Length: 418
Ligand code: EPZ
Image 1 (cartoon, rainbow, N blue to C red):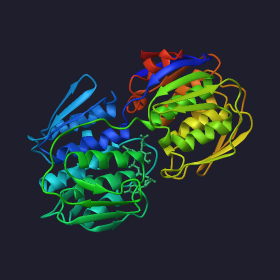
Image 2 (image 1 turned 180 degrees about the horizontal axis):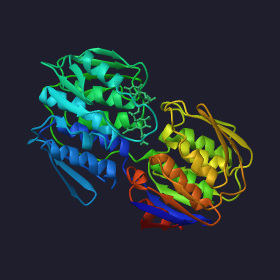
Image 3 (image 1 turned 120 degrees about the vertical axis):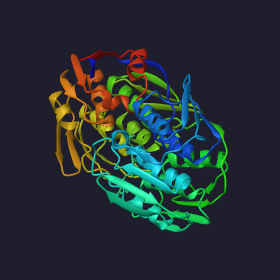
Image 4 (image 1 turned 30 degrees about the vertical axis):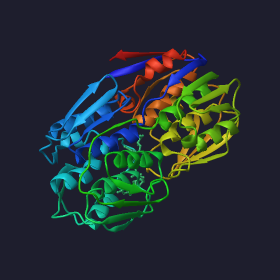
């Protein structure tokens, strides 16, 4: 186990290079199983969700090796369609492999996936979509078993614009016979990135980002070298950190367009934000003013993955805010931890009611999930005094070199073995 020890109160100044998007790299890793061509993914974040996905690919018989931050995958020797529970429970994106495995082997056996404990996180839309493509699905003793004679293109209407279900169906459909149309598909930028990658290896996918994705089945796929988009959630996390601590930080990332809902709120708070082609800078020099309401929505609405971070900001703004979480049932587990730091915040049903206080006070707090843990780090950096953030393995799932990057901006943060 490890913890962060953070001495709060420093303003943040300088520049940070944003990693490739975790939620783009993970489905692309699943897509690598579809082809015997060699896949090189550039600038892969050094995070445990990626290392666990690489373990799964290796278990399936793929060769996956890092060359610096670039990851080279050769799936030509893949020979297994089963993911054991120990690995599948490590991360949500193991479920994306259902589509790839059933496409390659016409069989798949995966334990129900793990991931952040932020809600029920069912996979019914994934399974319904695969069934529409001709997959027979049974569930027994915690495993999902898939088999099919032949994948046939079909029209699929998603009950809600699920990111994972959209991606899983795309992966199953790229080599199906005929055309698949996914309606009410998720519109996240990571879906468009997956489409771009799949077309680069020879698939025929269009419409990602529009809400309707059309996939024309092809017979074979090849290799590619691919640079995923920047991680808009990591970028947003650093922007909120600067807003909370004060200072001026410039991010090296071309994801401003994918962050417009957050940028709009931060400007409303009183931050000065400048955007040049591949850079976003934020300046915050005084106590900010609260935004009245924030509602998380599927893209392009306010991202649920930035809900904890913006709530921590609201806690030290002037005024009151109501933050409503519309996607996940229990994504406020970090709130009791913020209260230990002096936050005036109450959760009723899916909304957090915040009254701004002058400052957080340093305390010992516990990370319960990835983004909630990141929010506790931000609160500690802005707090008066010393804080400890425990169980930071949750944060390591999605933020590569987190303490190094924050330290380079002036944050006083150390990783300590417990
Ligand atoms: C992806 O999770 C992301 N993870 C999540 O990021 C992100 O919060 C989420 O999309 C929403 O943007 C990855 O991409 C690896 P969903 P996913 O399916 O695919 C319901 C992070 O912090 N639903 O879009 O699991 C579900 O309960 C992580 O980086 C069903 O009802 O999210 C939720 O209410 C956390 N049935 C809503 O849809 C299903 O079969 C959105 O879930 C699937 C989902």
